Image 1 (tube, one colour):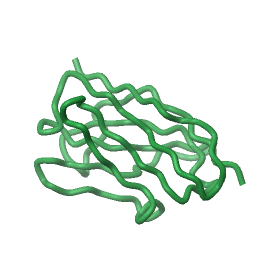
Image 2 (cartoon, one colour):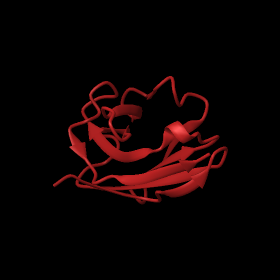
Image 3 (spheres, one colour):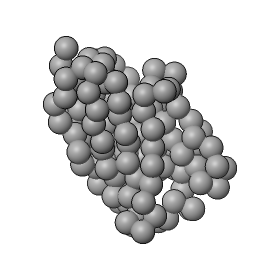
Length: 119
């Protein structure tokens, strides 16, 4: 059974940094692409980034390019979302997700973690 558990959300000031973690079980990163989505109040869920080991490719949304990165610890089967230069508009619930490819990264979902960026 595929499971994704996020942690690391919280409150941060604009310009600050935050790292989210996603502990995965039931699959390895060679099997699935893995990434992050977010949903702000009143807005649709949007893809933030998605990494595919098999394609050796990472998709980044334009809004986070140059500020957010993804890394992984294969021994822990955990991925991390490194968020830098945070802006109030980054405030959202962040979801870890996994899927068959970097352009279909949403077959499985975590429960979400809240990130709030104050101005």
